[in-house]
Image (cartoon, rainbow, N blue to C red; front, side, top):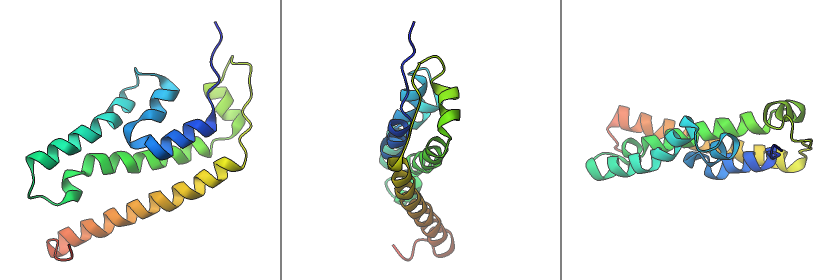
Length: 138
């Protein structure tokens, strides 16, 4: 039985773009991955909270999806910054191919740093606004 080669750049891109839905985890571990399903359930859970608690701030109702996106940002760094040799030892044992990630990973890490830091700072600022002023600034 041949083992499919798992591309590190594709896994990083999936974690960056669709990580809140857990697609990177399904790509790496298949549909039996519990953490991937937890990521995927965050979207309907946020929708249910939005429907059940319409008077609450969006940060409260969207908190499962926001948390999933923040975790996906960290997972993007974990995948992208892993050395190619370690990546192959972890995910491509027996595939016969070797990973050779180049500049796209570096560009993806820069974009992830920008987006992840922006999301984190936005969440912190909005949480402090809600806690300290009761949402006076929006």
